[in-house]
Image 1 (cartoon, rainbow, N blue to C red):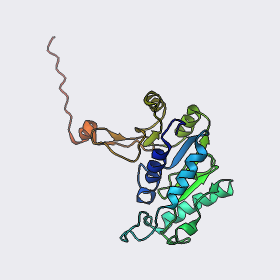
Image 2 (image 1 turned 90 degrees about the vertical axis):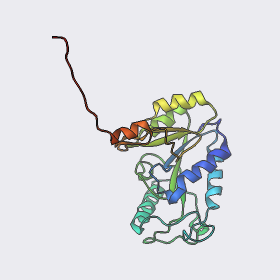
Image 3 (image 1 turned 135 degrees about the vertical axis):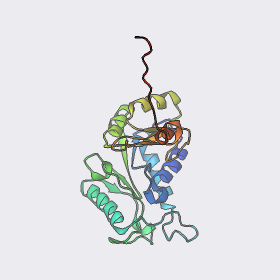
Image 4 (image 1 turned 180 degrees about the horizontal axis):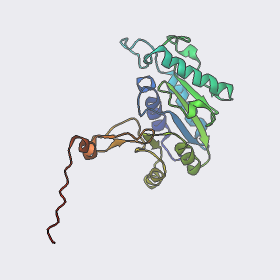
Length: 225
């Protein structure tokens, strides 16, 4: 997130992108890099909105966070957070805000926002696939790009800015299959859905995706002898 971004829009969109379907989305937000000039305000807004979510049974009115797919998946996320905290990170969400959350062995997991993180922590390098996100302070676009590219995965990434030229320039530098400006966790049927690195298997959507449903045939003719 750049200092010129619309703060309220970024907070609302990224909280949803991180916790949609309890974080169980292939293009869910895993890591967020925020310029130092707006880091604290962004984190405050992110935590406040996260605490307004309700964890509970998916069929109950008002629930917008449900369980993860199985208890082992929840325990995996708990382990990532615990390892990060032991290494010096801070978990900002008090689980008491989410009384439906269980302890180890429960698939009901409170969402968590973790700061003071770095890439020596599993939380910032592994896929979590759960309701947790690490937020890291950066001092420049270049620092953010280097960290974004320091990953085995490359399905989606986004930039939050009012500067379209900057968004396009950064998109050229970031190693990802899909690049967003001021949005995340969304599909456009007209655009190819694909990734790079360990996310780079195949392609769906767009005319490119339909090419997989066709059978090519080549004719090599030499008419002049």
